[in-house]
Length: 212
Image 1: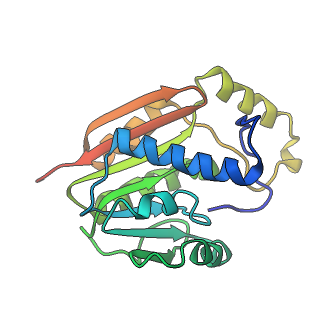
Image 2: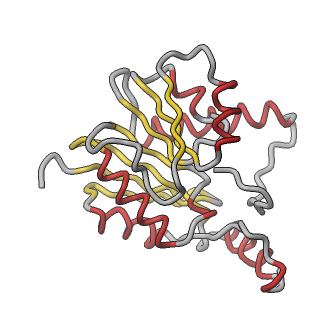
């Protein structure tokens, strides 16, 4: 999900060009997923808000199937171009509120990165509930957002507070707290929920129970 007029938190890669930054951040997210929820060659993996496939490209070679979901048909067209030649990739258009194109218990990993910052709290939680629905028992969920409790996150908050109410962009970074993300996962039914504060970011993940 990459709407226009997004005010994004600033991450510095001073020695890299734009294209290299794009590739570097995709690879960095891949390593984060490997370190949190893990991936294996038999997994069906779903990304909520895949954009142009920044993360999907480095992940697709590690799993049986990678499914990229996005609200923007334009982003999906770019993703199709970027990911052409990968025969285990599917792209699905979603409505921005749920994962209805996907069947129950059809995935092993669901993740969403730099998307929750553009969503209202209720929609964040709804995607967590939807992830639980589409995951098989034992499946894993990863989400992240800008950390309001960190100094970097507070600077983002203060910078956005400077906008007059009527002048705020339609899509502006909305931070989270660790307790918020952990609560969503626990309320949805995930077990072994963990949160890590990592500078600007909160990273949260959990496991769908093997049985009710």
